[in-house]
Image (cartoon, rainbow, N blue to C red; front, side, top):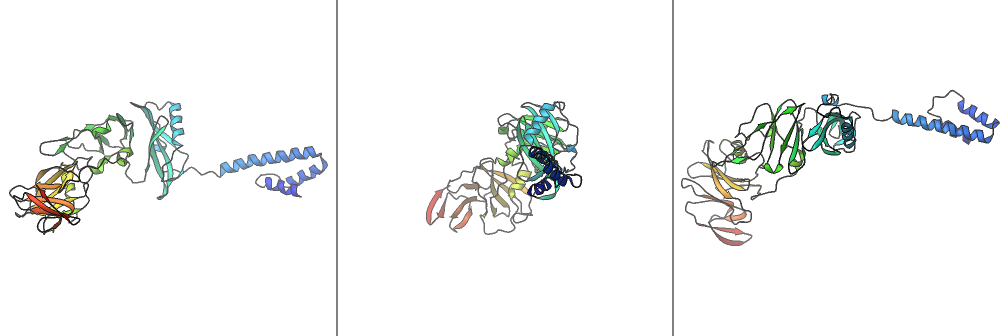
Length: 398
């Protein structure tokens, strides 16, 4: 009976006529042992084939995120090159970003073309991710046999849709996504300390722009419907950046502080017409005193002046910069403050106009005769300041 039980187990999933196993056993008793072994092998082979079919039937079903790019006709000047498309899909199927938990079988090259760095292909695929129960779209670029980057595009989410090939003289592949793409390099700073950028309208073919630029020249890309002005640095919500430039933060320059210091006893409101925690760097960026590439500065020194105006000092691109406001919040002017040198005693020294004194600051120190913590508005004509740090007293000439 052991052989019969084994045969029944092997053929449990087969669509065979009733009594099949019993007939096999009966025939086995009447035939030579060699024939019995042949039948057993045949049944085992049939069971193995059927098992393979069952595995295929139980494989994950195709699901879709509904992105039109999943079924769009392949665009680009290499759209008829099946070898390029197959090579790109092979590379693509070998890599998955961390958020992806399951992939569909609908990976599709929706654009492939020659670039200054060789053939490249844009691919879309439906995926499941940890953060959502609904399928999302995975979009990315393959260059040759290398997956340059992959981005999970969430439904109703914002897609970066920009990829960089190379480092020195780089190729940027940018998706238009129904809008225009503007790009600029090498911002210029004028004598008034304001920046400006010359913008170019990228040529888009088959929904994709291919741009050549050097990362060292501070390229900035905007996806928008309205051309930016040369002095407009407020379009942060329209800026797009490849992952390499998002993750590779520029080296920190200047003081790199992260706190708000007050140089005067009056400390309210934090800024005329603004909330207490509103940083002046946001206003300076909007007015063109900070470039897109400059990180948002998280420190500033504030002071109410004897004539009722409000002054603030911060840094941008390694330099100190001051700003004056009228009591009602009206912007007055910007004041240059010189290099922001880390490690220098009293690194913040901004002489104010109209005899309003000098803003001095040194984090983690006490300054002046009042032993103010971190910052002090020194009277006009002050030539030196006494500071206390870790119990030690030092006189610093200004």
